[in-house]
Length: 305
Ligand code: PSU
Ligand code: MN
Image 1 (cartoon, protein in one colour):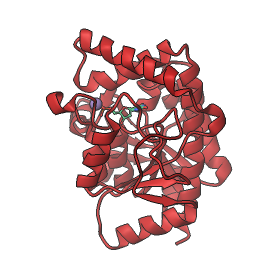
Image 2: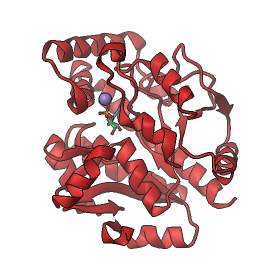
Image 3: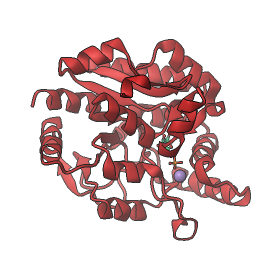
């Protein structure tokens, strides 16, 4: 039945059939997370990084209403050039973009869903969505968190951006039974910075240990995902002050302009990037590459269990 909607790229399908490691990648980060042309360069570099490690990349999106697991270079370029003109697709949006034969860039939530349909367990990205600041009033909580509660895909990220309320995000994940694993760290990384005042649940120091824990979780039918938080490499981390100032300004502007719902995250990402003069973009790219490397290493270990 799924074949009616789903196209798995032949290289990806073959790897999955042979139990070879595959790493899923999202496309909202391409269309809504970074400016052109660096978004396209990065997406292609991320794929190469995964290949160099010995795994197969599968960038995920919806093209002309087809669920695509594995994109061509042309499709990645198209999504990057189109940018926010492409629909940002989370769980609720999938059937409408499919039925309307439209194009869509998948968020963490939607990418997890499509990866799961294809049988991919490991997914690398930059940052996950979370509980927004002020959510006590607005109830703005990313659908990514609910997907992590339900869908059996592990997400390697650099923590969450400080545009979010990290303490509330941690609480939400705890309630939903989603483990937060710190890779070689005891502190929850905050995207541009390696550390925050928040803790992780379990510190694991090798890809092997992470693969073993995921295997145990899913073999016992403890459904849902996991957050694997991988700190940005020290040489690319940003000064806390610069980021805090940019985030505060961006949040104030969003408030003034009445930006809410699905527009909120893309607006804040773009403003933080502009306000830091693009320094944050270099950091963002490096942390994504770092997550791709770890994702590939975990996928390789997982495929050997
Ligand atoms: N955080 C980032 N970069 C991103 C996103 C979040 O640092 O590109 C994107 C991801 O696709 C994530 C989405 O799934 O934003 C969350 O949006 P929302 O808050 O509307 O669920
Ligand atoms: Mn949001």
